[in-house]
Image 1 (cartoon, helix red, strand yellow):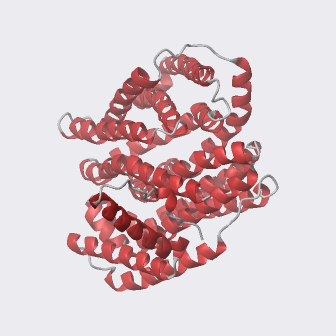
Image 2 (cartoon, helix red, strand yellow; image 1 turned 180 degrees about the vertical axis):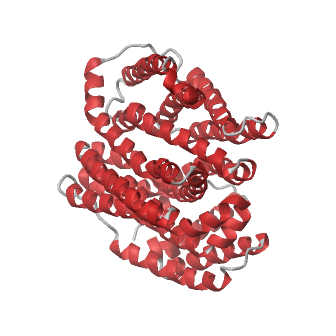
Length: 503
């Protein structure tokens, strides 16, 4: 198990880098565009992106999730799997273009021609982009994944900035930059890793993929409803400026948490699936326990830090028009994002291991209904804060139902001891940061982050979290021995597999 966990840590580090470098570029887009776009324009951009995310989840998510789940199963038929998925993606997009053309001819929709065209272009390009990215992830090519993510993020920020600042494209600028970046990445990947893939559908493979993936597409689509319907309801009850202010705070917070937690999941889930297929349920459970431990270790302190340091973060990173609203709702959004990610990256796995993904549809449907009802009740009374509260409550309902029904399909262990250690370390970090929370100078923000990380890491080290002291001791001792062997031209012996990380 130490080999698997060391392999996991290696891949988690690579995926953190693979998501981190592009994520920093994408994250930079929020302060940039929040200064260049008005709340109304950012609201229009956010509403288009929300529609794209919903349709993408509904129409294409199942192909990507099926590729990840069944790449190991069909490792002897990789061409048949890829050709089936590529053919289905092309066929779906063809139907999509025909439907969009029909909508274009409806006179009543004339004011929406620009959003429909922009959203349609982004949706089509993203369907291919996500497919090639998932193929790189499923085949354990994290560096290629990082390259494609970097090209997308670079296009989004760089070309989007040029389009808004120099060309005056307003809300359409970020969408154009995003689509161009993804198109370049797709061209690179298709030329290198999909060359020679035939357009042919293997019906038995398609039937199995659809049975597994279509319920997941509905699940993800309903999860998108939870995460984005508030923007439409805010625009309906208040105005597009309110939707834009909410979207900036929401995107800033969720991107931060999701970037950190997704790196863990992207490394863990392929290894857990492989362990399940090759070694059985017990091996998968052990891998998922380790996954949950690291998700907690990353997510809990991040939520607390976002809540305590909200003032300096907002003052330094967001445009002046968005700061007041963001300060009020970021702590709530951070809690909701953590619950959503922990559910998706850990508890949802029970249904995926058991091939009973249909349960997820009903659970997320219930949570989506709760979210819409609460938004309708809370927005007129409490505005943006009401919408954030509604999302948190909906995620609590969703995670409770997932735990209850998931345990009947596949028991996922929860690391209670590790959770208590993480909470203790996070609370001590919070106590240290609390007196510093009102200092908004850029240098102070950097110092606050350094102090918070150092305090949290020190407590984890003192409590020997995940055998950290033994890990560091073995690592340093191993490096010292290799340094001596290098001086005498003896062969090196240190490997990451020799460094135990289990408790």
